Image (cartoon, rainbow, N blue to C red; front, side, top):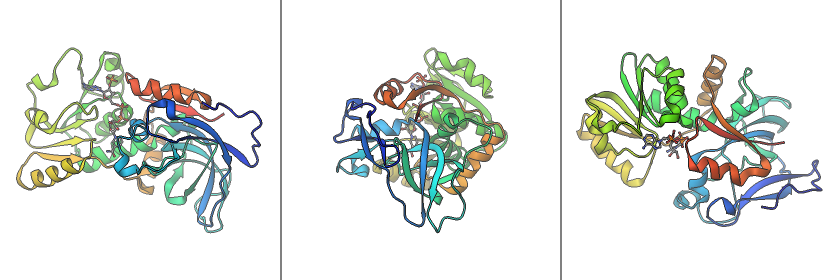
Length: 326
Ligand SMILES: NC(=O)c1ccc[n+]([C@@H]2O[C@H](COP(=O)([O-])OP(=O)(O)OC[C@H]3O[C@@H](n4cnc5c(N)ncnc54)[C@H](OP(=O)(O)O)[C@@H]3O)[C@@H](O)[C@H]2O)c1
């Protein structure tokens, strides 16, 4: 790793994490680059914190090269919190000094830098009541949770919802939002997360290291798999006749299969493809201001980027890890 560059000229230069080939965390390097300029519909953001998502290592590991392409260098970091440094002349919703949260193109990244360039549609006001570290943990997993609970599973009051992988980035929010919709939530977690999931409101908590959920003698209106360990076919035994199964693993085959299945079967297969929107980001800001719990497992400094991703990839986190720009 190049490390912190000693004579960084902070007025014109910045640090940015890039990689020049697919691989594990050893491909990540901190480089010095010119602070980018903006066009009239763009804003320059001084980044305060960036969250770590499993999507990051799937992209830099080359698992998603069909979508990301194979040209280098590439950048890392999808969601962030920061402060508006400069606005283009056509920008109307924000001014310099505003605190914001935002999300970049999943396959291009670029948030792991001292500065980044966005359009107004990529950002929303930072919730006033939380730190920049917690705010950075909201966008990707929060938007995913809203999309899963409100759109894909369309969870409503008194429904029985099973969330498999309930202490991860999406799970923490999915449990809380499903409870807000009035559902009864069964959270599936490893031993470390049992007490935590109950704190976020889960009605029943199952430790998957002690109990095989496929042997549960129960049926749910929605089965949400955030762990990528449960297939639609395996989930059917847990589903009511008109239940929904949500997977977070999109593939062309799954999308085709779900289209055909959903025409002929009462048990639906829904696939998450997270779509960042201004409305979604604003909803997250409102939820956070209304008390949505944001759980941080660890925070890292910019110079420990490789360790941060390595440890996050090993799993067993409660909530999210965040890299703080110092
Ligand atoms: N398609 C999209 O648009 C999209 C968008 C965002 C995220 N995603 C994907 O969605 C998935 C979830 O994201 P995330 O940020 O919530 O990931 P995460 O933080 O890694 O959470 C995954 C959770 O699964 C749990 N888990 C692991 N093995 C399990 C098992 N056998 N049974 C039950 N739970 C188990 C983990 O718990 P322990 O670590 O305690 O075992 C962890 O809490 C990831 O694969 C991510 O890449 C997809």
